[in-house]
Length: 419
Image 1 (cartoon, rainbow, N blue to C red):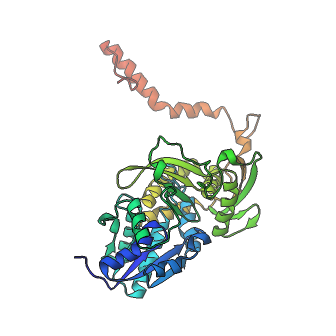
Image 2: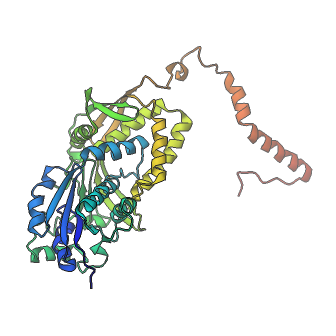
Image 3: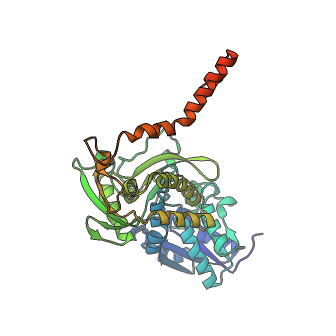
């Protein structure tokens, strides 16, 4: 017999999984269901009618939380500064889940609820992201995850359940891609995408939502200039904007030019490989611009080590470990590297491509006087002989020792280029 709860707080999007969860949870636990929806920039269309739908299917109330500013400034921007990507994926769903979970715990405490529920599957990454955050803010909380044990073991069965319970859905069996949308990205999984042998239908009308395919993009390029202050994007084409507005603006211009479409087979945290198609126009532009600015403002050792740290940062975010000491420490390191990452980056967007046009910074380490192939009085080329002599000294010493041993034994001493 299922454990009884007084109140259950449900992460609610109005999609297939969470739509069937409200009546299912009421049937099996006899609890009051309090739905929580997070506005992380998925658009008004995604939120329209949610309250009526949630209550009509059995929820006592619905909280709609405006988290756009917090999402952009406290999660997206730090990840841009880190330059973190997971196998090229720009972490759109990954860093939204811990934020949502944090606020679900707040609602749980406010309402005096005794459990939290979510609609993540037992095969996915999101279950980990939600639950690690819940453990951080409310250790010991009961988390109900029906996908791990219920009878609705496929999306077709969920649709059957929805139809039997008169739950309205925005999808049908033919267009039933698993999608997640926020201001940063839109992901597509399932159906024909489950077979990597199938080409992603990016030219099919209605598949892409944030833009067009490169083939459908304009024949003329679009130029865009982004200003950064200490690694933080603050303006587009000379107009100052907050982080939310910058992302919205670049989503439009990037999407219109076919920028930011990624089709990958990624390694999920739970061990399997999964194919997904991601739309991240603004993110792709911002990453390219930020990296370009770092090319002229960071010294070699800092940039190279930061690239190593970025990979670990991405793995932590992907694995749901946002609220961990290591992620916070890495962010502190990243912030220390961004003091001079200020300037303007101009990019040319053309049919899915991002082409560098110009980059300037008052803190640029690039010296045309040193780098020039013309005559200069800054760099003494004769100094290179001594540098090479010292830099190559270990190689020279090893070679001399090889010759010495060969002379004594008549046998060639194994060198480093031999197995």
